Amino acid sequence: MQLTIKGRITSLLCGVAMASLLPMSASADDTKVITSWDLQTQERTVATIRDAADRFEATHSGFKVEDSHIANDAYKTKLKIAFGANEAPCVFTSWGGGPLREYIKAGSVTNLTPYLEKNKDFADRFLPASFSPVKYNGDIYGLPVMGTSVAVIIYNKEIFEKLGIETPKTWSELMDVVKLLNENKIAPFALANKAKWPGSMFFVYLADRIGGPEVFQKAADREPGGSFEDPTFIKAGELLQDLVKAGGFARGYNGLDYDIGGSRRLLYSGRAAMELMGSWEFGSIENENPEFAKKISFFTFPAVEGGKGDPNNSIGTMGDNYISINSACPYQDEAFDLLMYQTDDKAAQLKLEDNKILPVKGVKVEDPYLSGVMEAVAKAPSIQLWYDQELPPALAEVHKDTTQQLLGLSITPEEAAAKMEAAAKDLASK
Image 1 (spheres, one colour):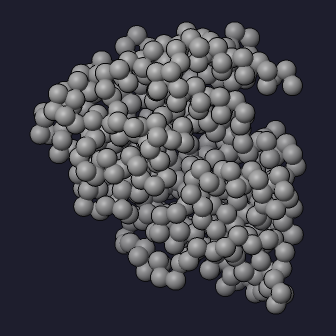
Image 2 (cartoon, helix red, strand yellow):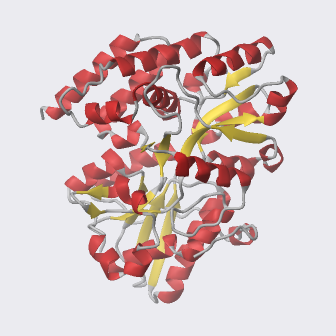
């Protein structure tokens, strides 16, 4: 299959509405309702999701898809509460990793392996590595539904050109850029860290560049010699705080809300020159401010001098969001059919037009930003799933808390590392 960007999906936007949250049971007129929750709120992206639902309904008489689109952080809370109350939707999205594994262990998620074995041609379209975050004991519990996303540093080309800045390849070069931008009264980085996960990206990249992915994996898996008090994590905290002390971020960064565009607005106004964010940000910027989208480019996170990590490593996921089925859904077969519509060739084409690359074989990318992202992915020896999604939820919260505290200079790197290790030990003992 070859997918190319041939047009825009504006025509799909007509008639797309935010559906209310409905139970999984059939409605009064005997229509069989499949509820579906996701965390996509961009209008064009919602349109691609609704297109798949419409195509499903056209071939499944008597069924209706009630799709609800909830902002990122509110979604996480709502889904957790819904599962706890046995009121979760039939179909839901996640990032895979630790949170999904918790639902799997509780018996709340349908094993998709038998379905994929019955639909082998469909299953074989996906890049094998894209299933890694949703595998548990060798089985697959979700399909990649949004696209390949890695964290990159987006920057304003006009500002860089005006000040004669070349994209930095090393941490010391980046710190030089930070100094120059401050001298010109421009904040180096836009960051909206109220939800804590955006700032985590800096820490994760620094730890990876300093020690490589193995240090984190050993600590997370509680392997012999693995510890969150490893010098790698302490050094990562030190460099992160060096960036803060050097004026690396626009003011108020720990209180700004990413979900309402807090960091992007700083870019649009020219008050900040860069943002470290998942490559999905290209689509968000183009949707919100297409003129500004022409002014941006990106570079990968720089190497740390003396570090053991490969500077081509990335953090992110080959699936971004994953779509799964609630094991309590009364319409299991039909729910899987909906999953296939959400990830089939038509869906992949529409997502590509929305600047999202579904990890399927044979994709031909013409957009220069997306092409650059795929080149970075192809060169990466390791793609580390975001810590807050790879770790068990309780430990992920400690990671986010300590990273926000590091950014706020309210905790030392040693104290942050000790808190993480203590939490990891406590979790492992239960």
